[in-house]
Length: 151
Image (tube, rainbow, N blue to C red; front, side):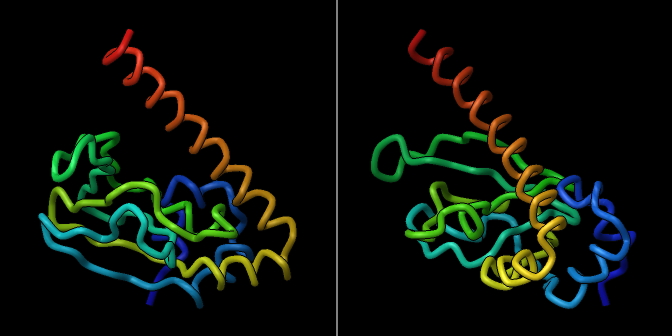
């Protein structure tokens, strides 16, 4: 069973109250992947939001066919797979997520999170506000990478 302290170790969730985290426990899945596995690929249906309990995942884009470029490395306590929540029409992942070291994850189905947020607006607001901050930071990192390559 998932413990509240385990959820509190996830940066995205660290600001939520214990009663809010208790609502997440029931819909939290635990998954394991081996180094080299792809959790998802660009264009796959975005079913889950993920958080790393232990291990490391690389977010990649294909520069050309079969030539991946590492855009970001996600480690313990960090979250990825936001398309499961924010891409409401298409629900497609926008990168590849490749496991760099054996990894244990929490996973939440996007539709279950959305239902929870409709029932508990404050929790949904705090959660999505945090996702927006993380997305902004990742965009800033990609802008710097873009400038380094083409600037």
